[in-house]
Image 1 (tube, rainbow, N blue to C red):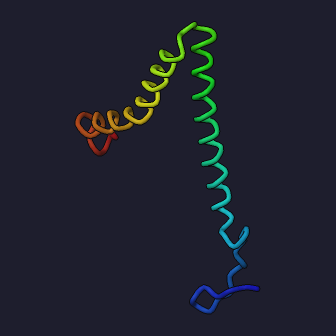
Image 2 (image 1 turned 30 degrees about the vertical axis):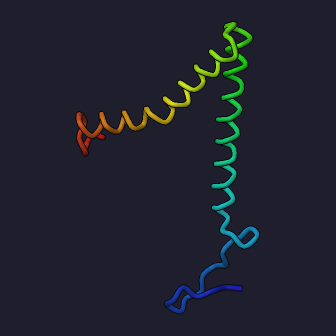
Length: 91
């Protein structure tokens, strides 16, 4: 079944998956993989610190907390540097 685009011309049928646009499926899978990787890396970092660097569980959790804070803080710091020193055109 084809649809009109408002001007009377026929357009190709839109591809859908369970009633949603196909691009939404790709977006979901990308977000799912990104979260899986982030939380998996979190667990592996903590295990690696405890087993190979011989940190205690509390110290490893503190290092991970610092890593997590920097993941969210550094884009803010980078944005401030770009705004103040690089300017709108270079940033």
